[in-house]
Length: 315
Image (tube, rainbow, N blue to C red; front, side):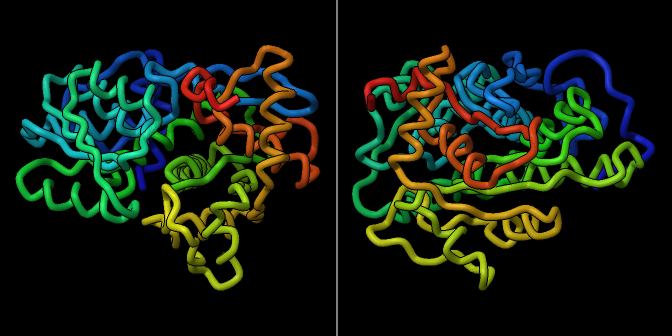
């Protein structure tokens, strides 16, 4: 936790505007991440993280984790990812002059695979279950820096800046935040950032944080009552979130809810948003579908985690 006195000493622009409150050493590696816009949609507010340099919120975490890696003297970083995190790590490693090895499932979306390669990273496709991809990266990390977004807390230092931005943009009117949840890096980051603000006396209380997953892959939602992710068969892209206990704590302590939504509801939300010019990844549309079921008050903020240009061929 940062010291309360530090909160408020923000200057500059983008993510590194909050440098005083980030537990990251070294000269910042930046591609202009952060400061993403908020737009109104229906009675909601959408935080458009797809505007980020490589098209997803993971650029925030990549900026901080690669900054930490470079400060630690890393020459090569490894990451396991089905796409967005791999692209972000590849981009920021390139910006830092560090080699990157990205381990991915052999069925990784072609456009994401190509992006990783164009950015100069080595893409290693791994056959078998998703756990095999993670294990391959962990094995490789014995001789390289593990920048895995699901494991390195330096990544969360980047995602918590979303909370800082929402505080500056919405203030005390912010009552509810909804986000899609995979590994939980947005959700946990939000909880960290709002905890900083409450501790510093800048906010009276944190907003309610709500986690949304697709019914076809909802280990956190299904296991919420027992506080442990439920098994999902066949094994999906994220079979068991690494920091599950922190995701559960983020929702529980904020007074939020977990919800699973159907693929039909996600597709309907995706198409309706696209019809008014809002192109997002299908995963992001899960937040809209979830918010509709939650019946949240006007002004609730939804985290739109990625750009629709990455998955346009799906529709």
